[in-house]
Image 1: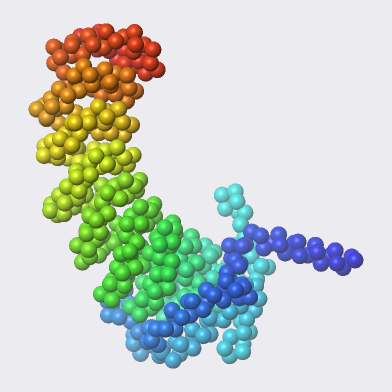
Image 2: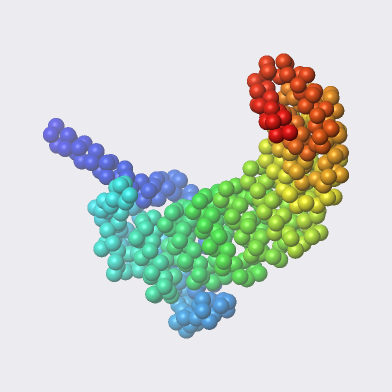
Length: 460
């Protein structure tokens, strides 16, 4: 009985130890779990479906002077050796247990006992003891790459290896990274390593990375760390083949990414870095302009895109025309009304007159609307005196005046109109308001209006 109790206590302790390090030893990394086997089968199909040359370290000729200047074709290992490295480094070992490689040699693995508690900003976390992996073999590092990359110091150490011993490091780390790529690309520390290693990869190797991430491309782009990693990878898509592949990945998700907090940064970078696809992207934006304009981040994207088109007047005018044609929808939309206000701020008399013509017949409705109310205020501000009088003449009729006085949004338009009127017309409106004073005092917002009117009378 005592032995049983001791065993139970030990298991409880092990559970307590493993609790904080679930980040390292997640279920998907357990080779015994069905989820792990499914993921590995899926990734192996992608990796090994490519030709053997795609796994080799043969470098393309881009930026040879500074980027890959240290690479020499004679020093690079042949395809056969690199293929054996893949099978060697893809040893499936349960975290915390030693594995056996293809040569039947025992490979050490990082265990729970190798973790030390570290306090960062008042929070204690378990971190890998740097003494465990410093000066260890590449076989050990690649076998434990998943755990090392999820640790801040471990990730930095492997990045240093890429800089100091590039050919050896890439030979071991690249094939070891691929099975865990979808998880590590969204990790706060591992994503920096992925960006770094792409600097040293050739076209075929980057192509394999793109094919792997394509299965979860949207989720990765929407992730805070994944978005950074994708932007980093985009810096190395220099060949036509890679750029076409990336365009095919982003094209069906373009609008969805433009509506996402992290995805929108990838869209901005794509527009700036892939000018050859401007026409295709512009057509997508034009076709989905209204959908984007009524979305919180999409609305801001359309605004930013219009500012990018200052040198492309025809493209800019095309989008402006779409916004104006849908003015009645956007003016009453929570987000779309900001685009109408932006168009007014451009100071183009043709745009301002177009908006006046589209709103003048329902001016009372827009003045009372929660969002359109702001557009009418801006319309009065930006319109030239002649166009402004068209609105004022419509608003100063007794029927519309009476309607707006008793509306909580309408009263602000009344006050704005008073500031633009001459003495004669202003007195007519003030007399109308004074005649309705008993009824105005009974409504909740009536005191605001009367106080403002009294200030106007004092000023006069």
